[in-house]
Amino acid sequence: MPGLSDVKETKLETPFGLPSDAYILGMLEGRKVAFLARHGRGHRILPTELNFRANIYGMKQLGVERIISVSAVGSLKEEHQPMDFVIPDQFVDRTRQRVSTFFGEGVVAHVALADPVCGEVAKTAVEACRKAGVTGKNGGTYICIEGPQFSTRAESNLYRSWGMDVIGMTNLQEAKLAREAEVCYATLAMVTDYDCWHPGHDEVTVEMVVSYLKKNAENACTVVRHTVAAMPKTRSCKCGSALEYAILTDRSKIPRETRRKLSLLLDKYLKTQEAGA
Image (tube, rainbow, N blue to C red; front, side):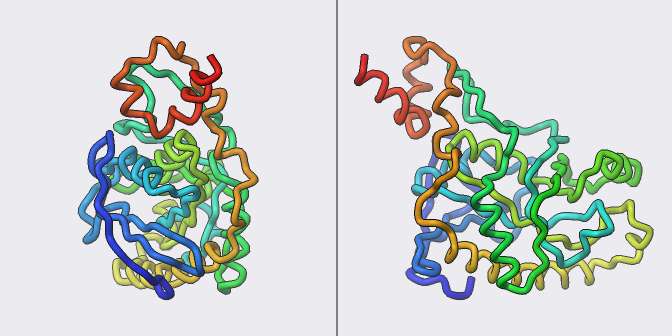
């Protein structure tokens, strides 16, 4: 990341195990930032194998308030061309084997997810695309599939009939967990190619996709830098209070071990209530 200074690495342990890799901490445009290689350095971890809970919880431990997720995706619409960035505002879940909540083990919480993306972060990212000279499209639906295989042609056409915009394998669980952790979340979905529905799909070579990936990575660095620079100092969204009315379990019934495990998420509300009791 050009412009990143005061760089250091930190390895974290979380109540949910180890994150994908060490977090890279530093300063960017005068702001503290943290970076995590979602699939581990060297791209070693399958989408289904990702410890999403540890990755997001680790961000929370570091004090992260906003997450800008950068992901390669396939396009399900002609209008989303390779090299475009889409900043989706909706997700559809087609995964089957993943844990996507911090809760359970004696605690029930239901956060609102009608709008799974932080509008404040998304708006800032769209404007950053404009400044970077990158085509950035605000809104759309990201369908998250299990993988690691890509879709069949029948599946690809089914998703198109549903009105999906882009397809990927990672971001839905991140969005859900970020909301539970009261962290703002938005996605920079980088289009590398059309999914297999497209008539020209078979003409796409691995070399072409890799070249798009490399160029998209360069563009993403620029967009992230502009996004960080323009991000409001304080949050005015509701992401930071997502759990305020979400915890349904009788406080006296929460198991001690679960309370300890989720203290980073729960203490904000439970300690306040205990103090007023």
